[in-house]
Length: 344
Ligand SMILES: [Zn+2]
Image (cartoon, rainbow, N blue to C red):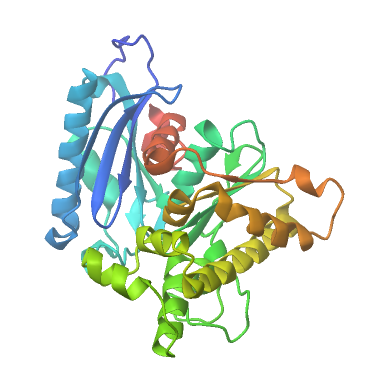
């Protein structure tokens, strides 16, 4: 760490690397302080190889992204990694990663990657780094208080207050997907009932469609899944069914929109943020039209109706890059809380 920092090729010493680690693919991006991506590398995660091998793949992706940017390791301040699961940003240890496998439980990701790269590494939850990305460079820029909600296979959130990511004293702030919206409702991925994730995620829409189909209602989704050779209802398939005015999918989507609206109203009543930024696979596929009924339901439930329309409920802007950008920002700011990240 005593390496002397020299002016790098872009004349700025706060270039950082952001990594978005997903169940199927991972992306490393070299990011300038203004959010410009100077180089990037996307590759398969190959989760079946286990935590150590995947960490090596992350290191290789970083090396390639740096090469593409024409930079060397000493030109960047550090690496941030967004991880799909609960973790401790202070120790850099992942608690568990259901999408990636059992070898991630208790895995010291930050330390392992630091040894491979000789660079400081900060890790945080993927949804929270996505919130940081949207707050800094996306739909939530110019706000002090903002909540990001990502709707896909699951449903996660990140909270920014006074311009800073709020982690909570046990690192579990922002878990909006597990707020109870319907007592005794459908079972959530966490095995409890009636949580927002079980009512408003793509998985929730899929479950309701399958229920209706198994009760004998006609839907084009069965044919579409067969046509695309898929066993799961992707957002793409749901989008095509909506475009075909499929009554079953339309009804399931309307229910998901209703519960997303309720969830947003609960967040607004609790924290009164300036913006709720909604992203994830469902929003990517359905676009801004998805949010119109959501806004109506949310507004109806604000306890403070003064200037209700000034609470912006908007679509995320960074798409696939929100995670990598947010992770790079955390590395730039040294927000991981680990002592080594603060020495840069
Ligand atoms: Zn839950």
